[in-house]
Each structure stands twice: as C-alpha cells, then as structure tokens.
Image (tube, rainbow, N blue to C red; front, side):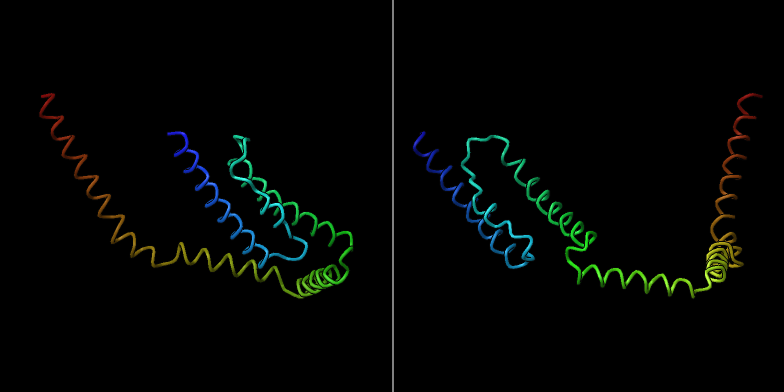
Length: 155
C-alpha cells in the first residue's frame, strides 16, 4: 500500500514541478529584465515537508510582482531611470498645460445639462404613461379590493 502511495505522490510531484517549470519559462519570456525570478520558481519543490507551502507560495509570487512594481516606481521617482522619468514628467507637464486651456466651467455646465435632460427630459412623460400609471392603477384597484373586503368583514 505505502509503496503505491509514495509512487503516486512522486508522480504528482513531478507533474506539479513540470507545471511550475513551464510557468517559469513562460514568465521569463514575458518578464522585463528587472523581473527575473525564474530561479525562484524553478527551485520550487512540491514534495517539501512544509505543510503551508502550497498556500504561501502563490502569495509569494504576487508579492514578487508587487515588489518589482514598487522598485520600478521608486527608481522612476528617484530619477534612477532618467529616460523614463523624463518622459513621464514631460507627459504630465503637457497634460497640465492642455488642462489650463480647456474651459472647464463650460464643460461641466454642459455635461450637467446633458445628464439632467437625459434622465429628466420630456420623454419621461411617456415612461410615466406607459409604466408608472398602470402600476399605480393596479395598486389602487388592489387597495380598493381589500378595503371592500374589509368593509364586508367588519359589517
């Protein structure tokens, strides 16, 4: 029994290792040079004694992505990557300059008018006639029916 079970577990561990190696290869193809963690992924041993490794390892992978993003952000903010920092700064300065030229008062006023006319325009009368009024009439008829039955019950 135990020999069969150990053999089955080793087969499952080999399959899992192959899946992780395939994932590491695909990740290496997609990753930036600063994001190479494939050694970390290839060293993943599924037949470990650690019982919480299946739950923590995926979290470690997500944390690796977050750390890479934070490092890249810090390097851009601290001008360690001046080319990227320059273009981001240039983009924001251009957007600020363009924003100064847009007449925001007029844009906000007309956007509000369009939204209000869309949701409260004259066509709401048609919706009132077709949808709301029949519901009110049905509710009135039901209340009259119950009121009529109450009068018979109490008299």
